[in-house]
Length: 86
Image (cartoon, rainbow, N blue to C red; front, side, top):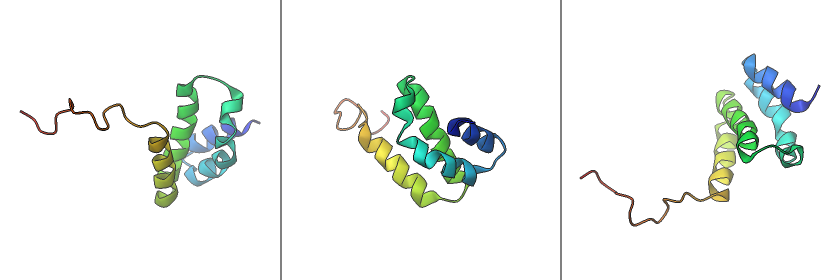
């Protein structure tokens, strides 16, 4: 049974620690399976949520930080984005 399938089953069963454990080595290889960027992000999202729900906040934060630094927000540094409501 493919690892992503096993991880999805673990997630559905609320076995978040096992889901995160299964996805850890898969995360680096997910680009090889193809699919869209959104499909790959869905796997990363599942791992992120699994980490948060299994009390692995530090690992979840590190994963989220890597993700946010990989793709800066188009709003970052934008002078046109309002800082306050008018």
